[in-house]
Structure formats: C-alpha cells, structure tokens
Image (tube, rainbow, N blue to C red; front, side, top):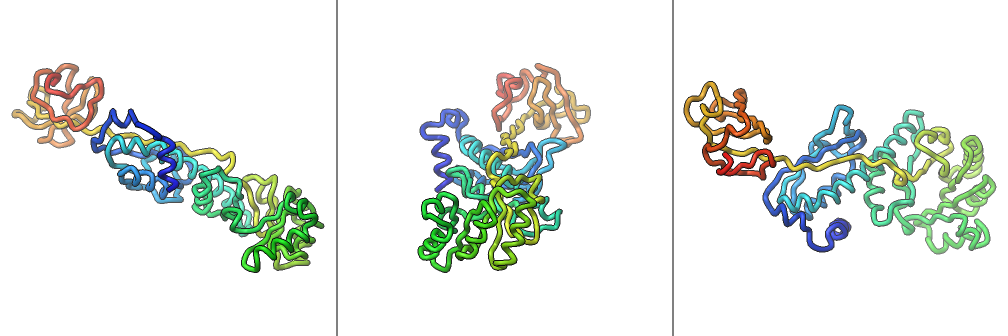
Length: 348
C-alpha cells in the first residue's frame, strides 16, 4: 500500500534509533503548533496502525486549530517506543502537508462564498507525484472540488493536443469517438473564438485560460448565451486573493493548484515522561501532615523534584533540595529518568 511504501522509504534497512529505545510502552502527545485546518486523520491513523500503535483524536477532521495562544493537543498516540518513532516523521509529514493544502483551499472557498458565488472552487492535476491521493483528499476536506483525479477521469484537450490534431474540432470529434457518451470532454481555450468552436464541436466544458477577469466575464456570457449546456471554467493567473474577480453567474468553475506552493502546518509528537513511583519516608522529605512512611510520586523530573504525597493527595506538594533523596528507600522506575535525576536505588 501507499503507507507501507512511505514507511519503507524512511526505513529501508535497520533503525538504530528504534533499537536504542526498544519496545517499552509509551504515550505521546501530538501537538498542532500553527493555526489552520486539521486534515489527514485517515493517513495518520493508517501510518500508526501499520506500526502497531493506536491514535486517539481530540479534534475532528476539518476543524480549525487555533494556535495563537500556544500549541494545541490534537491527538494522543500509544504504542511501543520504537514503533511510535518509526511512524512519527511519516505521519507528521503527511499531516502537515494535507493540513496546508486544506487550509489554503478552505480560504479560497470561504472567499468565494463570502462574495455570494456558489460555483465549484476546484484544484487541478498539478499534484506531487506519489502524493496525489493525500492532496486531492485535502481539497475535499476543505470543501473544494478535486477536479479530475487523473488522465482516465475526463478528457482534457489542451494546446498540444489541438496542435497535434490540427484543429479544435478535429480533436473533439476524435476524442468523442474514443471516449463515447459517458466521458466528459473539456477543451482549453485561449480566446473566445476558440471557446465557441469547442462548444460547437461538442465539448462539455470550456476552460478560459489566462484571461483578464473583465474579458473572461464577457466571454463567459457570450458562450453561455450560445451554448447554455456548456460548463465554463476559469483558470490561470488566479490566486486565493483575486479569485472573486473571476466569479460571475456565467462561470461554473474556478480552478487553481492549491497543492502547489502551499504553506505547511507545524505539528510535533512528544513522548510524555511517566512519573516515578517511589516509597519514601515522608518526614525525611518534609511533608508537614504525614509522620509515617507513605508513597510519594515524582511529578517534575529535575534537580529540584516535586513530590506528591499519596496520603495527602495532590493538594500536598513536598519539595526537596538536591541530594535530599540520597540513601532513601528503593524506587520502581516506570520510565527512563531525566539526566538530572537518576532514579535507581543507588541514587535515592
């Protein structure tokens, strides 16, 4: 599958880093660090599923990440340490790019709808090789149209086809004989005259390519009057910002390559250090309420650890000084300690 190919590309041989961390069960938080539309959930799920990990999402596909006040906890991933790290970069790369395409396309759709135009805001076939499925999917999440998926989904006759066949009419007639009645034919036109010829020859869609917005609207009106059944697509020179200049009641589709030159969203995956479970003499570390031995948990791993007294509950924080734990009771380590606090019986 496509996901297996991604993972193989990233790990064609031995993963030394994965060997170092091993298969210890871990929990990781997936953070969104820039604002935009979340997109790519099925692909992230597939990547981690291939790696034997489980993903719990805290935000739905297509919702907006607001990172203005800091990173946002988007999902939680659980699994063996080496498997989490095996899928990490592939999942994040896919998520960041899908979210980038969706954010850009959603902005274009929002601009069109705000201007009162309800036609199709479409992508193009100018996708990244090997990544088309993700980029086309992102358009759907954004509320945009995917346009044709590949060369088999619709016949599009561009300048090279026309020059090779000799004329627009010859190209359309030959395409119709080959494609039959069930496949739509679109013709790229550089002038209003070419567009009218294409419509007269039997094209279903006429693309007005690289037209000035005012000229395009006038041409679209003339074509619609002569051929009401023909769909008209505006393309070329269109941006998210100027899209509405091309919108009119005679234009059915406005297309742009939202999957080229897009900004990616920033995501990160961080394994959450697990607390140590220690059995210490509370009076030796300063709990004012407990006089006998009780379990204590380390909640902040540093040279100045914070301890929570299990008897008193979270309301009682026990603070110690560096070296105060030396010589105390043994500790059961549940996670690798930070360098500042080595949690083994010799250092407690």
